[in-house]
Amino acid sequence: MSTLQNLTDHARPVGGSRHDENTVWLRLRNETRAAHESIEKNGCLKRLLADDLTRSEYAGILRRLTAFYVPVEREWLRWAEQLPAALELEARAGKAALLFADLAALQAPAPDRAAYADFAPFDAVEQAWGCIYVIEGSTMGGQLIARSLLQTLKVTSGNGASFYSPYGTDVGAKWQAFKKAMSRAVDDQNLDLDKMIDGAQRTFSALDRWMAADQ
Image 1 (cartoon, rainbow, N blue to C red):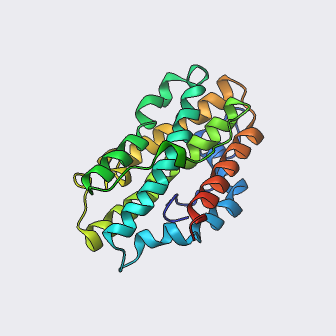
Image 2 (image 1 turned 45 degrees about the vertical axis):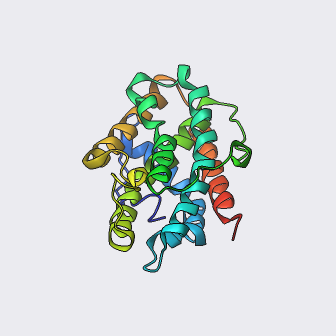
Image 3 (image 1 turned 90 degrees about the vertical axis):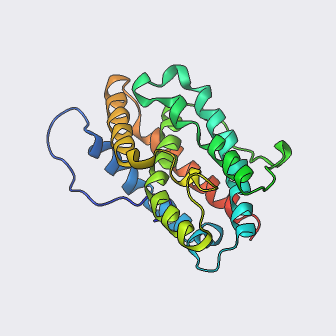
């Protein structure tokens, strides 16, 4: 969806036994297209781009996202030893902290631990990769949301919208670096792409259900 993955189309690369970043990314994108399109229609997330979005409503959406991202990032860290240093996992697993900071900037309460999403643990590192793919892809669409929030609520990365600008002007470079690290790991660790796709689909579906729960 545009609010999660504002990605462009590329031709499928031909030849070579090793995967480049577009080969792996295209397979993931194509196999998760249905889940991607489903979450694009999520009413709660679509409100982020609405002209009549209120600060109170925005804070409520951030609370829901916080309650989802905390267990998701904990699951990433559970697989840290099997993920390469090139992924820069600790830096990427800091989005929940940004959500907490944004809630504080808005003077809105953070969610109680009891309200956190029950995110099912993965059985394989490939599923963790698929999950990270979904979350990292969302940073691209986050740029669109950040611009909309600036217009509607006058919030920026410094006063309530840091979650939507986690890497500042480096967002494109971070996404390319992620794709490169992912494709390299597929070859170096002989990862199962089907399991990566499963992890991505599970993440899309879990986020879609979670953000629709209060609808």
